[in-house]
Figure 1 (tube, rainbow, N blue to C red):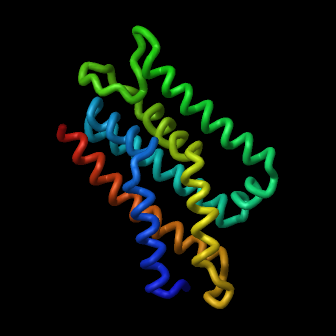
Figure 2 (cartoon, rainbow, N blue to C red):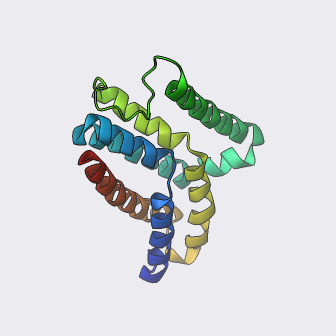
Length: 176
């Protein structure tokens, strides 16, 4: 088990990550404002599942493999860039309803689409993968026991913080 004081330091870093504006925050705010609280919560579920996906990757060493094999990391970064370009194109093309548009008269997206976009927005965000790869190793020590258990402890801590902060964001934005 990771000592409480070290877990607290990790929690602070996780908090800073989640409050820094990025694709997850923009997506959650836009869905909550345009489609209401339930759409924001479904989108949040997708974002949280994206975090869980990253945690599983880092816990089983796959994130390190992505960075060790330059082509794999390049493919991930390229997919992330292409997805962000797609979102940007959707936002600016004529007569289009952009994914981040905040017009209250938009038709409601189906729950599956809300969830999937939330998931992809998180999974394809390189900032999240870099956070896990750079911060997890600093807090995992062999003398604290199982590396997998420590990774999961850190991951659960990060997900709890992310869920709480993003839930507050969704609930606040839905009231606008």
